Image (cartoon, rainbow, N blue to C red; front, side):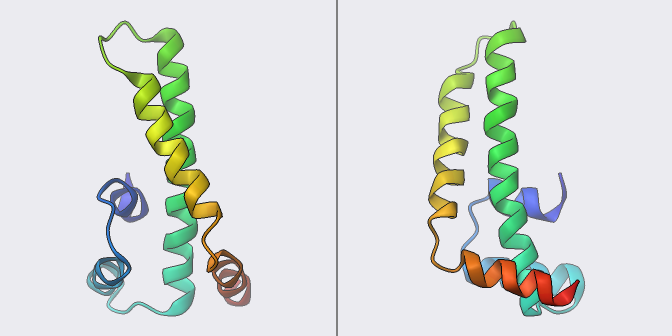
Amino acid sequence: MGVCGDAAHLSLSDDQETVLLDAYLGQAPAPEVARLKLMKILSDLREAMWAMVQVTISTLDYDFVAYGQKHFDRYAAQLEDSRLPHWLADVARKS
């Protein structure tokens, strides 16, 4: 899953994400924090879409609709974060 997926699934706080990046990369510069934030958004979208596929094809007795809705709600909430334009700018500057 990777560090971004882990951060998304564990619902880490901003401070915990900084500690995670520092441990993983040896530092937590703004572009890497931004990249983590953006990848968390995409991770939640991916999980929501995966769950919708599972609703159709899975034979498991699991509430994939609720799982997908949880991740879609998190995805939508993150799109409303006022810091999103800053994260996009930080990543663009590094590229």
